[in-house]
Length: 147
Length: 388
Image 1 (cartoon, helix red, strand yellow):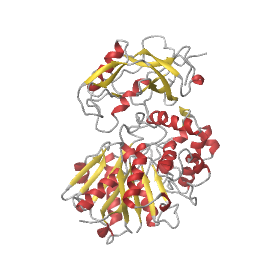
Image 2 (image 1 turned 120 degrees about the vertical axis):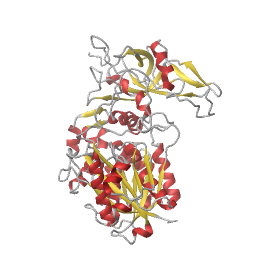
Image 3 (image 1 turned 30 degrees about the vertical axis):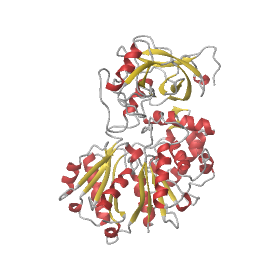
Image 4 (image 1 turned 135 degrees about the vertical axis):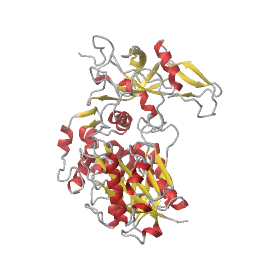
């Protein structure tokens, strides 16, 4: 069976992430194979997407924390038309809810579309992009019953 | 200070797929038509409002119209999802005395010059600042293949649909109803072209399993303009005034424009609930006082979620409300009687405002009977309009 996430032969074609000044740490972490989140150094609130000020206590003191990389699929879709730029096959786009309680838009890989459902337990892995960078994507967690 | 603001004029160009002229010209033509409709000379305009996304400049347009002395300009962020915020801003300007004749416009060659429906991928490399249009967090979607408005909307709607058992066939009922309205509206692109549910179900997937082609609004060229002034002055002008009873914006915490994935309960549109709360509180009106709803329909799921947010039906029951025929002309609450952005044209939400005005004047093609109050909602903003 064809896997929608099988990397096409040749160099990666996936679009690069866009670095905004406040999110540079996230993509630099991903480049090292780490999934990082932004936590307020004063009140410990975790936020995503990253931002320069904590919305709970307005502190500017930020710290990065390594995230578990484990979560569940919250919602998912397959963009069919027009074809997504940089993807040989239509990707499974998913909203992932991490164990830490924040959500990320990503892809679910190494699974057939028929097996994707809300609550599917997933873990992070990384996919290369055309400009030599990487993005975090998620695959089903082996041996873990899904929610 | 004027107590109330009113819509005194509406204007538009034809809606097409290739206007053959500049966006500034479309803006100028629609604006002139709206001012003529009101019976106000263009020189008298002293306030101008559009979207941050509109490519024409206030000064460029005012120099076309011969505006004598512009006193106030502003732009609203958030694209069509905030389109009705233009009325909110115009009302604030008029009732505060900052401006007396406020021209709202939106004009675009959104089919022939560029297409909102096509993938949007930012250039590679480097650090960029992207802000100002309320769409900054879309950057978190592009590298994952979510590159179109349909894909962004579908990812939010899928959770709602799965939670309440809403199928794409249920969404099809929205399209079929609106195309029925468009079929008898000569201004609509789909005039004379109704749709069956089977045709909807045979249209190709745009974003599986949520949106088929016929769940998506059109891409259109065209311009729309609205003139707002005091109710008192509007009473002396050419048309029957349409009073802005109340208008409101709402952008609750953690809400995004279309990549709206970060707020607590993904089965609702918190922004529409916020708008509903404000509109009902400010007007003293309730859902049963409204006889028409113009609901932003870039994609069919938005219609269902706004019906629930405004309390026209219970949460999760919009699919049944629609299936039972309530949103058809002659139903309990006719919705998008011009065909909406799906059936008439996609002028970024503004043509749903002009339809509400035509309805309240009694001059709509698909006229709602015994109409006194209409809701216009786009998600992040809304207004209740009245003919009294």
